[in-house]
Image (cartoon, rainbow, N blue to C red; front, side, top):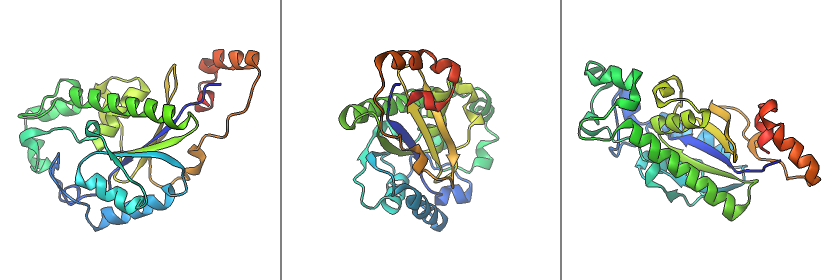
Length: 238
């Protein structure tokens, strides 16, 4: 069967903006005390994993999360994972923004939403998906298919990546949840991605490490690949 890398998407811990009900966007907001505790806690779950690579959004809240969660790691910055550019909305209270004419578009038809002086949600989704798929191919090529790597990013970015993995339209991505310091796992295969975990804030992550690949006869491998669509499970990707 096909063996592929496993991507762990980590959302940063809670920030001062999250606590205050504001839209941080690309502002340099930092983790609050709760966020630092969340980062330390998720680190306990992640440290046992053999991460082949750690990639991060350039924003300080993601870098702080990784410093606390994985202090021995050397994260590589990926601009494609940066938060959506909310333009003039950044720094404003969500209660105020909810009264804007654009708000229902963001909630119900996000693929058409373009933020004033900022980025469109469609553009955010496209560059985020392109970034993780490119990194996944690179990590697989450099470290082998049976490997795990991590990308630290933001709520809307992670939700957009999940929507792509599920094969659903961006207009449905507001139905997806990615809480602070949660882990979401995706495994990309040549035929389709598999969503292994979503918004996981307490589960055992060790089971996400693929088992060593077993040698199979060529005929058996062909049959297994052809049956993958019937099985419908993530195990078909390993």
